[in-house]
Length: 395
Image 1 (cartoon, rainbow, N blue to C red):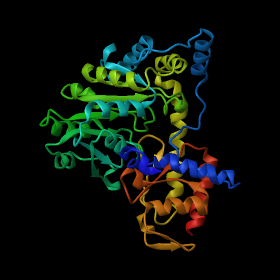
Image 2 (cartoon, rainbow, N blue to C red; image 1 turned 135 degrees about the vertical axis):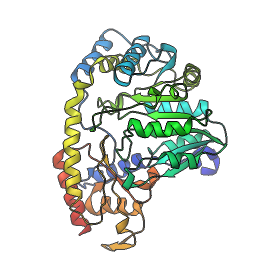
Image 3 (cartoon, rainbow, N blue to C red; image 1 turned 180 degrees about the vertical axis):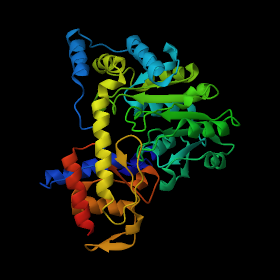
Image 4 (cartoon, one colour; image 1 turned 90 degrees about the vertical axis):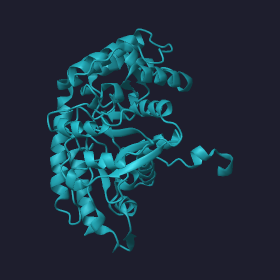
């Protein structure tokens, strides 16, 4: 019956990360011991002080529709957070709270992109960027980066990708899936290119901001000449282990924020009332309150890099943030292992699921055909066992 569905949905790709998670659940239901390293979800519990704030909100009878763009108290907490952590000054009309950072991105695409507008995506990029752009009839323009350059786009590459149709550039730092972090100097080089093109806008996805192992985070909007052209996207899913609470937000030029508010008012209206009250407490807390999670992720990073280095054919760099490694596994292309021929990263990822019982995600979903994404948001024992299984299956 697909012919009865819209072209829009028929042309839309299924999220590869969610598809792999669903496949892993199916195999578990069949009794197979699957180790899931596919989802970008912290394995920690939400901190107690945040849960207590949610319980308090329930007891205080928060149960009504919320303002479309978020409670004023939450927006004030976001403004304080932006100033404290990012040296960014926003006002209430510049903040829009949404049902997760993914909705924030969808809002931005809907209000900024016209049919045929090009959006530059440094590859690898987060799995949904491309299809969110396409849903607004935009054209994703992929800029290929290299593991040798830590998967970061250079100023020269940006310049070469710009055309008269370029409307935006979207990037994440720290990056999902590569873990790469753009330095202030690297962002300045990109900004110097964009100075010549005043009608190009930037989406800076900073959802992994606090999971940063290099000791510094810089926002594109900190540059005075980029502030009015940058939309800063963030949320609480990753840093505070609140993926299911579904709260994201933007800081943007007020005219863009108003447009996102208008769009959201016709789609979902305001985000969950209880989650919003809890997020106020999360953002009021100093980043040091979640340092224990970041420290553990850093230990896991070193563990998984050490273990992967023992497997022939895996080429990895050292990610500076998030909780992923993005190894190049193209050395296996064209080989037949246990009767299965590996032609691409998708074949390799499926092979690991079926033979090693380890769920990963193909790099093709992120715009890179030579790599796979492995999440280390799992216990150290699970990581050890998973890499042991991979090594055995490939041997």
